Structures are given as C-alpha cells and as structure tokens.
Image (tube, rainbow, N blue to C red; front, side, top):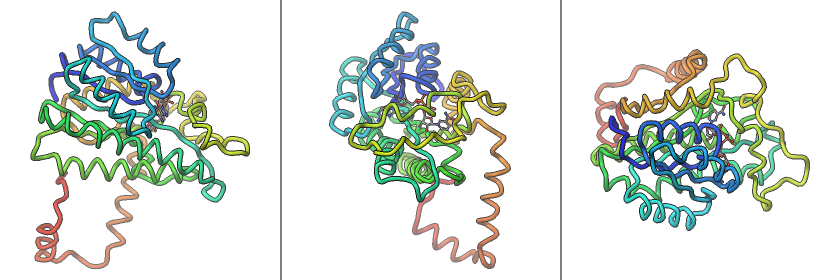
Length: 288
Ligand SMILES: NC(=O)c1ccc[n+]([C@@H]2O[C@H](COP(=O)([O-])OP(=O)(O)OC[C@H]3O[C@@H](n4cnc5c(N)ncnc54)[C@H](O)[C@@H]3O)[C@@H](O)[C@H]2O)c1
C-alpha cells in the first residue's frame, strides 16, 4: 500500500512497545488509528500522547482472545472512522522456560493471545479488509521466533510459527482479492514484553512463582536490541513497498539460512519434474 494518508489502521496491543510506535509512525503519516489494548490505563496514556497531531485517534479496550469484544471493537472503529484499511495483529505476551516446566495455564495464555488473537483479528476484520481490496493491508506480527526454534521458547515458537503459516496461506488466499499481507518478524526490540505477566488473566495464573521472561526479549542494555521507533519506521517503509517479509534484524540471517539448508539437505534424492508439476496442480502455495 503506497498511500497511508487518509487511511485508518486498527492496532492490537497498541498501548505500548512496538504497537504504540507503529501507531505513532502512522499518525505521523496522516493515517487515522484505533489503538486496541487490554490495558486500559496504558491505552489512555497512549491516546493522550497521540492526539493533537492531526490524525484521528480512538481507543478500544480489548482482550484479543474475546471474539465478541473483537467484533464490537471492529463495529465501533468502522462507525467512528468510516472504514478500517489496515489491521495490525500485534498484541503478544511471553512465558518462557524449559518445556517440561510449562503449565497448561502458560500454554493456554500464550497460544490464546499470540496465535488465537491473530486468528480472531483475521476472522473478524477480513470482510472489512476485503471490501477495500488493494487499498487494504493486513500485517501480522510473528517474530524471528516464528522462523527458528529457540531454547526455553516452546510456546512462543509454537504460536509464532503458527502466525507465519497463517500469513503465508492468507497471502495465497487473498491474492485474487488484492488485499496486501505482510508478516513482521522482528528480532530483539526494547519493549515491555519482559513484563507481559502483567496482562495474564487471573484464571490463567500459575500458582507457583511466575515463569521468568525469555532472555531473548530482555530489556537489559543489549547490543543487538533495536528501538521500537526504529522498527516502526522500517515497518512502514515495508508496507509502502508492499513487502511480505518484514525482517528487521539481519544478525538472525545465518541462523535462518542454516535452518533452511538443513531442511533441503534432509530430502533424499532430486525432485522429479513431472511429480513437481502434478503436486503444484494439487496445492497452491504462494510463490515468493
Ligand atoms: N520485543 C521483542 O523483542 C519482540 C521480538 C519479536 C516479536 N515481538 C512481538 O511484538 C509484539 C508486540 O510486543 P512488544 O515487544 O511491543 O511488547 P509490549 O509488552 O510492549 O506490547 C504488547 C502489547 O500487547 C498488549 N496485550 C497483551 N495481551 C493482550 C491481550 N490479551 N489483548 C490485547 N492486548 C494485549 C499489552 O498490553 C501491550 O500493550 C508481540 O506480538 C511480540 O511477540 C516482540
């Protein structure tokens, strides 16, 4: 999508971190924004910081795992702004630790927000986005943790790999309608993700001490951490150029290259051209 001015974006997890920086960059580009977040207090502060900069800003208190509330937030956004052209499925949380130590509550919470929340956003907003065709853009936030598995990040990896697969399929499905799809896979960004326990609902709390956050998302001074503002600027540039992969941290390239190569090397024998053709007649992958 080349033209952001005059469009409206709905951003989940828009009250802090990457979501807030994206909202701020969009406002700077003349785009109206609806910031949706489960944290009412942070949402109020965020909207205060964004208002008065020339673009229409509204808020929605929303838990992305709540499908009815998602629909209400969508209807309210359309009623207030007239349309929603961009959807950022950005809200996310983390509970890290060796897989044998993780509770059912950890699984339900992280999968519910990081994968379930994205599914709910897609299902709720697709009719509105499809109404705008090529003037619409769907941006899902995964992570480099959706491209390569990492120690102590089993649930996060499972959810983010799911978001990657969903986004690739979406791009294939939406091609004929023209809705643009992008997949944001950041590396380490300085945000409040390390304190995401603050948003764990009571019924999914662990009885024991909360699991510490992943070292990969540490807020300690980190030579490879990017600021959320820098990532937001990079993301807007990629949206304007309609790039599917929004991959911001080149230091992860060797890891991903190694993973891809190991898959290719594990195949036995060379592909038979006729079978390749027959297979591609059966399934329709999006071609990169
Ligand atoms: N920070 C990183 O290093 C990093 C790296 C890769 C990917 N990501 C992803 O970026 C996204 C944004 O995270 P961030 O780093 O800005 O963290 P953050 O904690 O600063 O922001 C996440 C936002 O999501 C909101 N949220 C949490 N649960 C919610 C729910 N159930 N419903 C609605 N909103 C909810 C939080 O209140 C918060 O405002 C996440 O999907 C995260 O997985 C972050």
